[in-house]
Image (cartoon, rainbow over all chains, first blue to last red; front, side, top):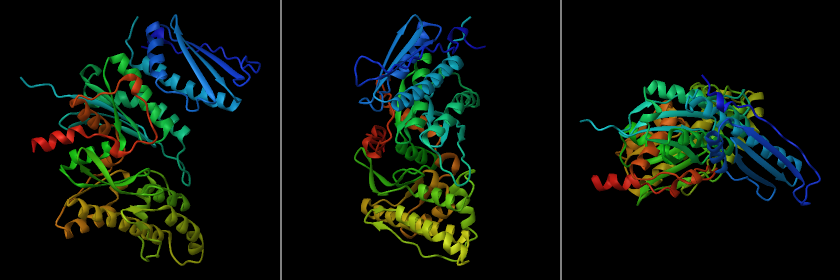
Length: 108
Length: 346
């Protein structure tokens, strides 16, 4: 019954790098999620783009959509901020994805 | 032909309850399921764990709300959510779900002030027209009256909410948090026989509870150990003291605004002893007390749906990029456009 194309298979490409270009934003992390369709990816992007990072001086988040995939890039000044922000993001991303699976159009 | 009534789906998740309700513009509640995050005795609820609880329950609640109401998403006119005040992470759950559903179903969003929603729910359920409102819950304590377009705060707590004071005292006694700590205090208080003197802290139109809590926390253990009193006596004394303070500031607001009736809303509003004390004061002033039971005074989705629908019917909605949530959102920030029309029609 689930919409196959919006399967919540997270393709996680998470790389922690400590040798970033800008000395201040030393901690980086990338996340790419295949949402099955451009439409779903845009819905999730739009829903999550509304909330700004709580500490913009400590964590920066950049999101983009291409080919049905949502990419998020995190840059932080300390590992703990990166972890908190990334973890909170994954929680709401999961919620948005599950909402689409549950209430989105049931396509073949 | 009968015109179709406007319908709203409302989401509330600002504290430890997640609720989804379907309401019609005339105030008919078609469904109002909710789920409460109950922590073990002696423990309060923390933002992250509470948000996890909401994550877990929100989607089944939507299904249940729609099924019970017998409506399809097509028939819903707007999606309402609690914009604030409340805890950040739990608030975000409703906001994110509503943003996704708004795109899937192509429906407008309405962000709602939690405090105003309590007031409007109380008014529609009880039929109170223009009361002084006492809003008492785990997070808020305010005496409110409508004046010139807004719900104005005439008195409030200057530190913690009355419900927070009760909840935290329940932790001292390790009372159960099921169904709520306040309910268990109320039951135990009925067995109280001796009144223990506690600080009484009214400052003009405002009240303060944190000193009372510190005092009772500091003295309870010793008093209980020496058999000077029972846990029931402490619950009884705490309730009597806190509620007397609330009745005092409510009465002062009534005299100030020249209003005769009182409406009690918010989770602490189901306390029957508080209702009884307030009823006595109102009857002495020739007025009436309006109060509701736990279905409506405790946080629920229907109150958000109904208040959002009032705003929507008056032409307001929240654009996607503004559908944020905020921990601080005062009652008097909202322009109560629908109240203006009510008084014009009266």
